[in-house]
Length: 149
Image (cartoon, rainbow, N blue to C red; front, side, top):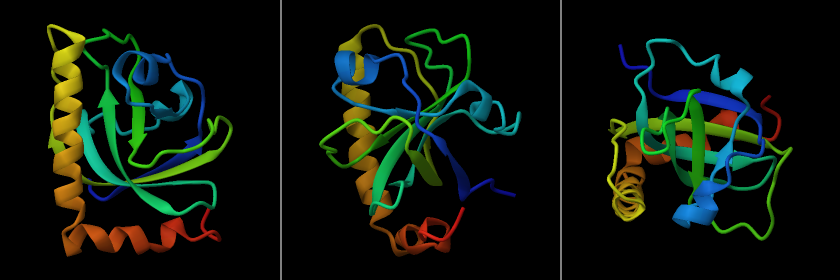
């Protein structure tokens, strides 16, 4: 049985800062404690789906769930890149995500450029996948209503 769609929500915390600074790909991060609630058998890698910050609109997103081999993380992380430009940081906000499709397993890279190119490919693939009606419907899911907790 597929674990998708997979829903998760929690407070956005400050991450390592490398997504924006090193990769030009800002991410919203959950706390280590929340990350530990992901089922142990959940497949790590890159997924696409939908995200909502507080009561704002629902946007497309890509998310890496795992250890980010290029950076050799010691703890599992959930790093969400929302495909929308926000004017300000939103630390402390509630972030809801809905994963609908697995894009690829985690990979290691020999340089930041290789990772940046792969992220661009992941984003392009996410746009195409999320245009499909079977995935678009999750954008309107009750989970994202302002009443849903």
